[in-house]
Image: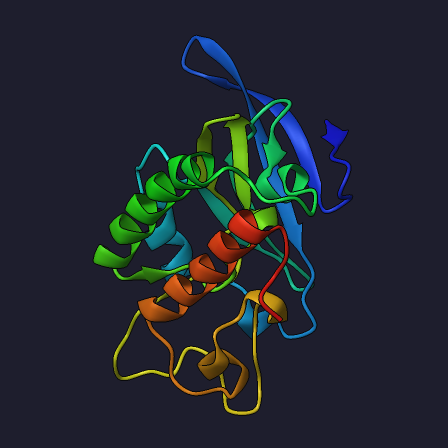
Length: 193
């Protein structure tokens, strides 16, 4: 067992059939545990099988924390690592963004909203292969439910849609707003505000 650099994860080598496979166990300690993915949502996220979504294999919880078991991507960087304050070439930005939009379309069609799209949650196992990661606060879209209680917000503020900050009911469009902020940053080298 090795502890990952963010100190919130462990990397383990486990047998899968006749092969050995590395997995990442991501631990979450949130001030409000109800903001974290629950069992039903984790099951839905684990069913997402898309080449641009980091696979989640398992979910668990204890009294003090919840965790996700997901694929470990060796030597992977994130889009956040790649954004240096300088704009990316438009074609490079589109080559990264189009697969991410396809991944979100896939997740949204299955009723899953990510709720924390940002460059740090976009892994780059290869320079031109983005993977949407960190579904730790993802939720199933249920039109009868508000995803976050009134007066609360979950996610990264700078990439968050305005309705998320005001605790208005959200849906897949809030992910698209966040993607727009990420694309803006890719094309200009800065966030819009």
